Image 1: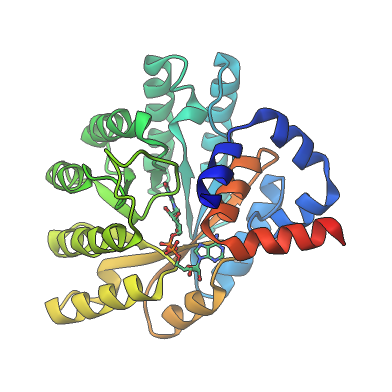
Image 2 (image 1 turned 135 degrees about the vertical axis):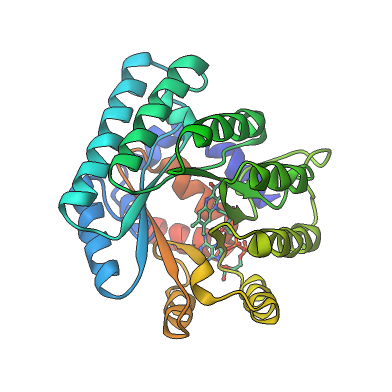
Length: 302
Ligand SMILES: Cc1cc2nc3c(=O)[nH]c(=O)nc-3n(C[C@H](O)[C@H](O)[C@H](O)COP(=O)(O)OP(=O)(O)OC[C@H]3O[C@@H](n4cnc5c(N)ncnc54)[C@H](O)[C@@H]3O)c2cc1C
């Protein structure tokens, strides 16, 4: 109930405007967001690289509804690849298709995505297309598959809460796409998504067991120790080496687990969100864990 309410509120522009003005929200959001500028993200990436992690930079923002905004965002992503190369950072980029105007003009979105993927390829780097809510799933899979046909520098994300995901995983593997496996962060109806956590978790393990032996370099993105243990055990039993896949976690979440995996010799990539448009991302993090909301409210009333 609480999760649904927070996810519903995450789409409210009015609440976003109000919340982002409050100093207390900014302070709490800093736990999950590296800062508002690219400089902030680069500084966080440098620190994490030095500590032995790779990173993925995410310029926050979604559901862009003007053409100029989408084109400007694409220019920023291309410049980010240049900057990552100039700084010699060990990092790639994650983006959302609605930031490139998917809601507005599918052709424009595809052309911008192709340009950004070409920039990634030029730098021998990689672009990850995040997965958004279910109205975008098919279009994301299709676009990723089409752009992948021209360059290996692109991959996407699959959510274990969706009932359709096994089919998508098999299709994307057949197309040679790299996949980041997550549980899923949006509000979805029971007809298309498993409502029970135990089913989401069981599907996560099932999909992980399809991904790892596929010979493609995939990412297992979770902070759930049980999912992590299942992955480690399966990889060891199948003789899949630690450098044939990576774990991914979000900036500021379960740093103890991040550190433990790195010490054990696993590859760990940290997803670094930054930018001024942090409200929906922040609300999804509150929805994932009631303790985060309590922390926020305690600070608000202090
Ligand atoms: C690198 C990365 C990229 C992602 N990309 C996408 C994407 O493209 N599309 C998408 O839909 N979702 C994405 N997600 C979010 C994902 O779908 C889940 O919502 C999120 O990871 C929480 O699920 P979990 O696997 O950590 O397990 P859960 O069962 O939710 O949590 C397990 C444990 O992790 C810790 N934890 C989890 N979330 C939080 C939090 N917010 N604050 C503090 N502790 C927490 C808690 O200890 C919790 O008990 C991404 C996640 C990661 C790590």
